[in-house]
Image (tube, rainbow, N blue to C red; front, top):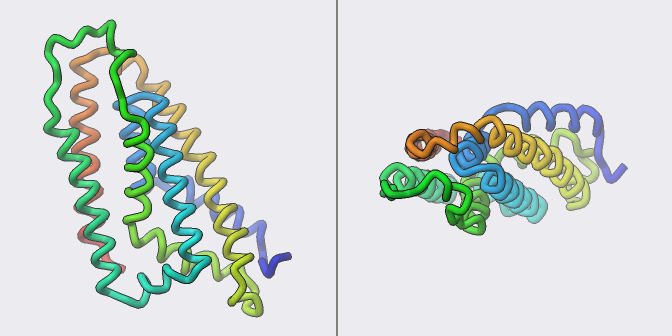
Amino acid sequence: MFGITNFEAFLLAGIVLNLTPGADTMYILGRSISQGKKAGIFSALGIATGALVHCLFAVLGLSILLAKSALVFEMVKYAGAAYLIYLGLKMLFSKSDEKFELSDMEHQKIDYRKIYFSGILTNVLNPKVALFFLAFLPQFINPEYANSFLPFLVLGSTFVTTGTIWCLTLAIFSSKLSNGLRQNYSFKKWLDKITGGMFIVLGVKLALSKK
C-alpha cells in the first residue's frame, strides 16, 4: 500500500529507534527535570515539530543536499552545536535570586514558547536527523515508488507520531519523578547547572561528529 513494504517491520524498528537515548531524549529530560512537566511537554512538542520538518525536507528532496554537500552539512552541524552550547551556557551562568521564596516556585515565570522553539531548532539543526530519514525510510519503500512523495510522507509521519508519544511520556514521567526535588530551591539551582552542562556536552559531541 502506498508503495510501502514491510510496514510492520518499519513500525517496530521505528519504535526501537525512538526508545534509544539520544540528544533529543537528553534535551527533554533536562527540561522536564529542571523546569517541570509543562516545560518537558513543550520541549517534546518542539522536538516533534523539528522531526516533522526533517520529514518534509526528505519528502521534498532537500535533505539530499545535506548528504551530498560536505560544506552544507558542516554549516548546519556547527550551527546546531553552537545553539546547544549557547543554551547550556545560558543555564549554567544564569544568576539566581537568593531571596527567592520556595512558596513562589510554582509561580516562577517560564517562557514555554521559547522552550518549544528551542526544541525545534535543536532538532532541525542536527544534520544527522536529516541523513537518518534519507537512509532509513527508503529501505521500506518499493523502488518503483522511489520518486513518489507519498510513501516518504506516510513513513515519516508514522515515525514522528510514535516518537512524539514516547517523548511526551518521557517528559511527563521524568517530571513526576523530580517534582519533590524541584521543591528544594538549592537543589533546583544545581539541576539547572547540570542541565546546562549537559547541553554543552551535547553541543560539543555534535560539533565533533562525522557524517
